[in-house]
Structure formats: structure tokens, C-alpha cells
Length: 181
Image 1 (cartoon, rainbow, N blue to C red):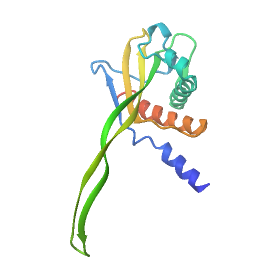
Image 2 (tube, helix red, strand yellow):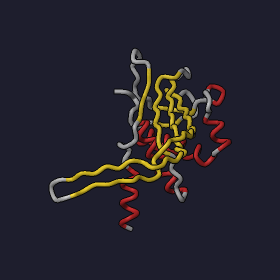
Image 3 (cartoon, rainbow, N blue to C red):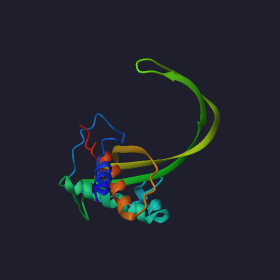
């Protein structure tokens, strides 16, 4: 039980997720009180609609996390005449990295003085996966006014509940930047 609590506490903090945002600095952006999902024909690639087809569980989690975050801040999702529209993107990318596989070292150590060195003997290529989470806010006319983005390592949780927690953590980190201050 204690281990589960520590994991949940560790997962709940979003301060460790680097987020960048972009917007037109000449426009004053305020927190909208009503939202609606951006219609599919207005979405840009990779669209939320394509994510719904390729990974419907993740798309549902992202939408639920966005709704949770915004409703906790007093906003509502409405059927018509929203003040702002929301869209999102999620993509995976892979990069290759050369990392040392083992090292050969030598050194001495005493109570107050130490000396040591190590150098790699061999390198291996590792594939690193990165997830790109993007949330866009559009004005009532459907024009993009704010974008928040986070790049994280790909986590492969063991169960749906952990996936919900990870998704909410990433969405909260991004949307904590909206509106810009």
C-alpha cells in the first residue's frame, strides 16, 4: 500500500515535465469559460481524428484529461457557440543513440583523496522513443491562438489506470501554461 501511494505521489507531480508554449504575443489571451472540440475538417495533421482511429484508448484518455483539467478550472464543454475550440496531437518518434556498453577503469580511493578514471571499451546503438503531446487552443473563429507542447519518454504502463494517470499528468503540465501570463 505504501509503495502504491509513493508511486501515485510521484506520478501526480507535473513540475518535472518540460513544456513549451507558443502564441501571438500581440494578442491578449484570456481563459475561455466554454470550449468545444475543433471540428475534424479544421484539424491539422496529425489530427485527433486519426489518433482516434489508430489508438482509440489513448485518444479517449487525452480528451478526458483535457476535459478534467479545464472543468477543474471552471470551464465547460458546450454543444454550440463556444468561446474557444480545443484540438490535440500525439506522435511518437524514434532516434538512435550511441551509448557505452561497458567501461574499463582504474583508480584509487582513500578517506580524503580520490583518483579514478574510466573509458568506454565498446558502444551500442539504442533506440530511444519520444512522445510529443500537443494541445491547441483556437478562438471562436477556429484560428489557432495558443499551442502547448511537451516531449516525454514513452511510458508503457501495465494497466489502464496507470495510463490514465500518465495522460492526466502530461495534459495538466501542458494546460497549466494556458493562458499565458
